[in-house]
Image 1: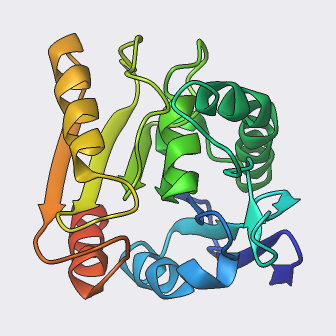
Image 2: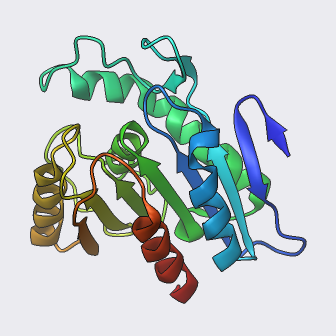
Image 3: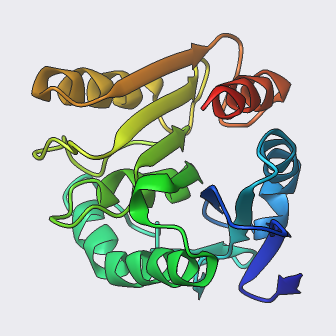
Length: 209
């Protein structure tokens, strides 16, 4: 099933065991994450798997965005994320309601800007998801809250020139020091992208969950 605002990759026939929501990067579309979404669906037949479109047309003239990156700085990024966060959380809650899956069994998987939104959702008072997977992402600012009910998995290309992998390393270190459940994978020879090694890594991880 496909709508302008999402692609429903998989809907299990019986009760859902998990909800996996994928969030693309700025200037992209839900279609960009379909190969990864299909691979994850194959590992978890009892999961709803949805590739979600962000709400606003991208400033780049193609694709979509959660917040504008035109003129973005370290100083104003957090305000832009905060302004977009209510819509992001409402999207997650809507899919949780539709699938019948609560936060504990919800996985938010984001690439780049989608990862920024997913990571920052862990800093909210109410738990949004039991797992956040950040691919080539970062926190908008160093995390201040330990997401006790959310496991965080950072995956980052070691050769990423768009979002420095040191942001994932720093985020993982900070969360670990707070006592959070954290995993970090740096992928050699990978830039700002998702390759087969990332797909295989996630398929193995979710298949064991």
